[in-house]
Length: 225
Image 1 (cartoon, helix red, strand yellow):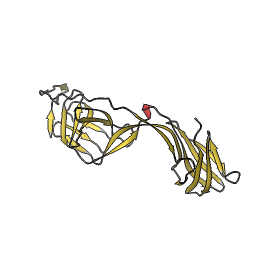
Image 2: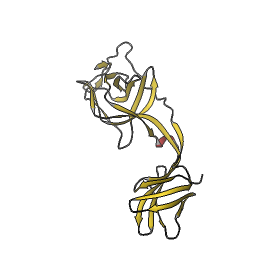
Image 3: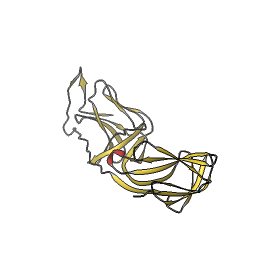
Image 4: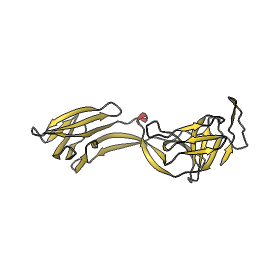
């Protein structure tokens, strides 16, 4: 474990700045905007209750890591890092910086009583070392724990994704729920005895078979743009 310029005593911040020790987290990771239409029109697919029948629009993504287990970086001076997802915010000089994702799956970092407030996690580009960086630029480092690299949606960064989700079947009636971005879902019902095709906001879907647990269908046309 390495300690670099970070301490707190009786509520008064006393930075012990060593030569070349200050680390300034960078916030320069660009958002990756991707066009999504899934499944492709004309393809026959089957989904179960609670799964999306159609996802159409643009998604803003960021790189992220998922820590598998909690860890404590340091001893008397410490950061307690929970398992969970941390989103990449920037990179510079052989290091990548992450912040806890603001979702139920996101990780959390707690500074020890004698430790400067937390600003970001820093992962060396070779993946060998993980550091907790303070708001004053000091850091505590340890060998990196097991983690996965992944891509996560960033709803605050723009994009618009529309979805239709299967809600099951009761008698001849199937239920679907529509969601537009982060807005609350809206439910709709369709009687298959009237037509095997369902439409919603320009989207057209032809149902081949539906039960209370799953539905088989083809997307004829995605949502209108």
